[in-house]
Amino acid sequence: MGSKYGIIGFLSFVVLTCSAEAPLKWARPDGFDENAKHLGLPVLTGVTHRLLYDPLTSRADETECYESLRHGTYSHHQVFVRYKNWLVVVWTNHMQDENGPGQRLLAKVGRIAADQSDVDWGGDDTISELCPPAHPVRRRRSVDDTTVIDGVFAGGGLDVLEDGRMFVNIRLMVCDGWTDDLQYHVGSGLNEPVPDEHYRAGRDLGPVRERRFRWDIFWNIGRFVRQVELNERGRFVAVGPMYRVSKEIPPELKVTPTICKKILPLNEPYLSALDYSTAPEAFRSAFSKGRRVPPCGRYPRYKHGTSKLAANGKHGLAHNTEFVRPDGKWVAVRDNLLDIETYYAAVKDKPEDYYPPAHKTDLFGTAMPVAGELPCGAVWLIGSNAKRTEAYLTLSKDGVFFDKTWSLISLNHKATPGICKGDGGAQYFHAATVGPNIWVVYSIAKEQVGITKIPVALLTGLLAD
Image (cartoon, rainbow, N blue to C red; front, top):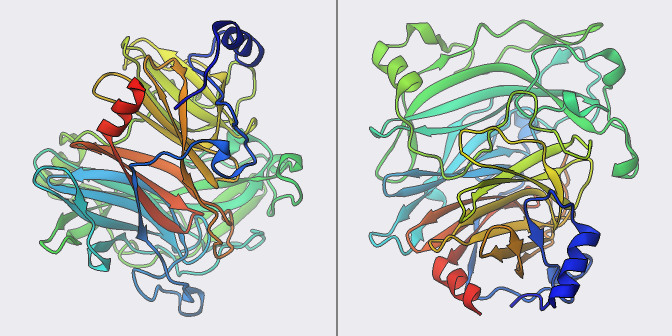
């Protein structure tokens, strides 16, 4: 089911709403309403939704540690990792806030059926803690007016080698202060002080679009690595000690030229982690030179310092997805923090090329979309609204004109309040194709982790309607 435009109406629509340089076009369906449930779209049937992780409220700020793997009502940054006959979901977890003190990395493992037709996700017994809290667990402050850095959090991912070895690649970071300039809001973290005029301890309040200081500042603290293996029960266990890949953790952090804060000592095993140079040669060779299993997701390639650039000068590009058109060209789709609810896109000829600045498209959506290709070459894409209560799926035969769109998920989960989280639905999508199905994982209100199974045959059939 899709829009029914005459050629004159369609061409007029494109001229009015979409830049001629935009590499994709979207036919806004009849009845589309960004304020309506399901966005006024027909609901896609034939898909299966499941709650993968439903956490319990934590009181970790009273004990400085988590009660269990199920405790902690912030869950986000979920991605798939494929390991042999297992499909793994990895995500960040905190007691209540985004990137809060003591944030950890969790994983849940599902066993892929022999014919790849399904995945058995089991119960809580297949949840593991990939890396523990680096600082005592507590709520994240809304105002960073202390003289001590005590809010280090963990992120990172799971590297799988072709020979079967696995490494948890850990990045320790801290959020301290808020900025009015997106060049200092960098997810990979800063290593240099922010100018005093672009730093504030607290963020501005009021309507989001009217705030100046509204983007949090990330700082790099250190990198660590640890080898792990998967036991027969589907749980990750550490193999050997943890190694510190970066230099010694500095005793203090200079956040601006005039503000310097002492860093609280890290928890174990980070505090006693061995220097990477002391690791066995086989370990270092495998980690630095070992051939990685291709990741489930794609990550657009940009020349250093250009990933935020937009052709119209609104340089706030953030989250991303990527697909390949039937003609062999590559397309990156981005959201823009300075122009919400409209995706931007850029096209390139070869995978090794860098993407140019993205152009504004007429495709509705915000935050992290996800896209991929069907065996026939057609392209699918999933996006969501700014409230993140409505997720949709749209299809294109040529990867240029997306003319068939459905509601995929409509949710408004009442979440435990926290810094940078609130009520909402499915958001920040990641996908993996396993056999005859596309699996899509997402957070629900940055609290629960949900998963949707979409048969490839279903989408292929809809293209012919």
